[in-house]
Length: 321
Image 1 (tube, helix red, strand yellow):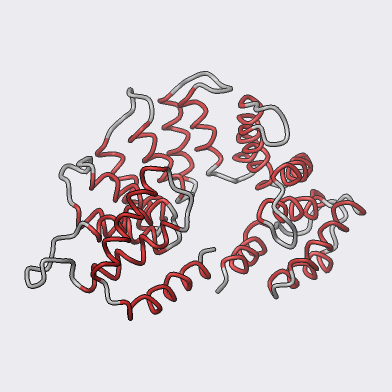
Image 2: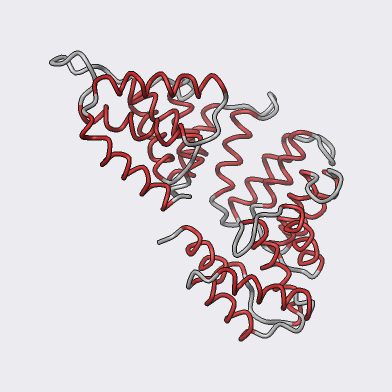
């Protein structure tokens, strides 16, 4: 299923609350009409309906949907400023997820000057509206001392609260705090456990960090096969940062003793993930290394493989654009 359609369906199922007083003059039939158009792939029609709901009727959920459309390019060009403007309007009308996204806008200074204090205020409001992972964003501000008093211990507790409230992404945040946070709370063993818990929910960022920890000896021992396995799990879900690492580990796998080069399996995998990496923005050093590895692969890989492997890469990007 197309990733955009998945996002629309998840939006409809989990983000939009039932019609209530907080939703203003929302007509569920109007919103359903827009959602059906989006799910059918007619994003332009959905976008036009969201504009009508937001502009003509000052509808909070229309504002929120319009903000998401600008943010994701659903039926329009991506426009982060307009997205944040409409998300702020929706947040101030009480839409829970809009509160979180508006906080991100305020933290990053998208449509206004960066204001971590304002961001902290709205992350807290989002969390109070049952958007639990917002506690981890608030925790991040406490970890860094931006907009709020620096308090690493409080940051850890806030994120643990998000976990208790049933937010799997909070495991990733907690893992990153233990791995890279203030030195007073760093704990590689706890980071490994947190990322492991996140990986049980099939979260690609958690899988990526498990790969990172295993390749850098932060998991107790350094294990390239385990690292490659976790990196590839993340890459297979479209986690862009994992493409290069997965391809490089396949490229540097032990040689086949019969040929003195990579096995057919590892050769094909190296080619596919490095090709995927080459299509992404890469820092100069990684880009040069990627091109070098692909050139070396081209010297030994049968030309007859290229079309099929390129097709598999294209299929991956169709699923994870």
